[in-house]
Length: 230
Image (tube, rainbow, N blue to C red; front, top):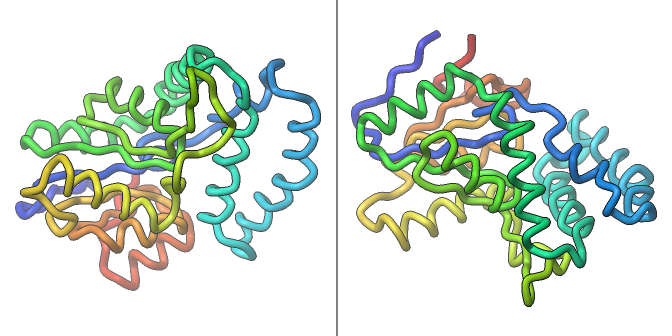
């Protein structure tokens, strides 16, 4: 069903994985990198992958898993020069995210741009990935989890909070307050697909469930949110 942008919308917020893109093995280049210590990879498979399975069944929070995951991905890069971090992030964008873009959702993004709406990507992924993808698709900016860099080297930590779950609302609200003070979340359309993004959509004036998972579909049906999918 084609989605028509409501007349009251003045800005747009897009999730990436599963929404703007169809998803896929986004983190493969990092997980498989020969520069990641083998013991760290072993830790991933022993402790984090079972958590992933539980998040898929709803036993544990999807947002909690994504917070843990992006922190682990940062830890994998401990000691990497920032130039290496940038190269990895660029490769993820060009080799994994761009080929998986959903043309129909990119069309919605472009229609917002044509209306003069600021378009903002909001994702748990590293800020370097989100900003690069934003540039590639013609969005105005990208908000993501910020890697901590000290003296040109990745410390292996996330600076502050991750841009996950309900905190996506905080990231978007802070950006609007600092950069676009004439706008608020009440005039933003927000697009997302998964259960962990229900708080994100709830914080926007014009929420849209895009290719929703079961929990997001149920929330959208209950709350009367539009659903976009083909």
